[in-house]
Image 1 (cartoon, rainbow, N blue to C red):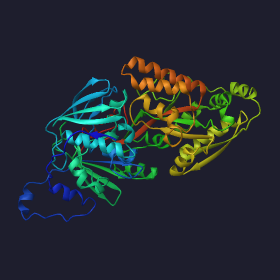
Image 2: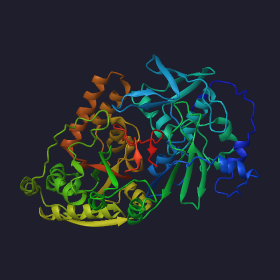
Image 3: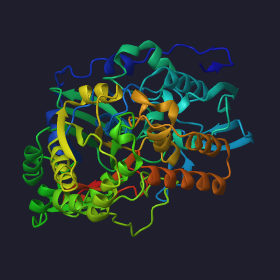
Image 4: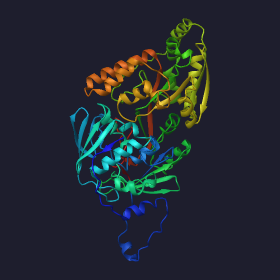
Length: 523
């Protein structure tokens, strides 16, 4: 529970924006000008619109409610965070002008002045305090702020955050798009509508839903970093991959997320399309349920790891658009110890030798995957790989909600999933996947418990010295590699397709965030 040490004394502003934004999704009749001749003489400048296709519909545009990319891809254009990351992954100011540690548990944040929310409300320290409190109460964002003991307003544009315990990853957590800063007054008046009518300080303003399939944003001309070049940014939800490709090829959309490796091969010869590919901050992995008798044997787990042809998965499923992962922490995340040239440990002969050293145990395993075609294809490769060393694999493909519930209860032997970056720090992935207090639904679906790992994770969190932290994380990753409760498979490349008319777009090199305020469209 965050204790806010201040008295609220803020006038309630009733703005026209509040009334209008609650009508998102409702069509309005356009008023026709009576001055017809004046319009003929002064034709309106054509608006520049960028239409981006993505494959999934967000459940809510409230950034705190769900930790899901379909929503965050949109909301990161509407909101700002206190802190952001540069292309090298270093923390840089955003809504916070600067920050300073008073001691290892107390931080002063000095905020930017003169910033307004899209409805005209002035941004100040009360909004930050409110946002941090609300983050702690919502399921998608609570882990970012659960170490906050209190937030004290030290001025209209400054706050002091006191932590319960020293936490080196805390500042990185505040750079997550989940840590968006909201307008206190607007949220209190419109709590039920935040998910459909967001109000932030970002480069684009929420405009309207169109048939539940398109979310239209308009440029914030008063954005504190400078107005976007384009006038409109539209996100079009196209769930079928083939339809996204067709829309891109016919210029119905100018950019498309989630281009599959197969479709990238198809598009690479299209002279009107540019493909942008980069290493993502994700890790595809297997979790081995060590509560199961056979998987409690370390040699058996090592044999499984050696028998899986990870390079084969990269080549056959992703057409080479990925890299073998040697450790669970992706090299784009701070704290990774993975080098440029990873070791492919595929060695079925050694796997067979290890199997032969093991007393007779159960050699039929269930492998749980979500109902994703690519996941199922990878599962089939793993099934074939393990068959060569005498292990039978039964693939269990279920919808995502069922997958989370059943594997959280430990009904699987093996499961395959992907870790997506939520904060750019090794602590996040290691704490979720290997910490004993995270067993089950919290993320540790290997049901793995190691007192040394727990101790080093706690020590790494409680020191602000980066050299000490990296040593702890290095030790932990090597323990995991040796004991094999989790098998890292691959780090995927992400491919985005775009029209050649799109100018000035570049990937953010350190995160998955790609903001469009600098993008231009060739007329």
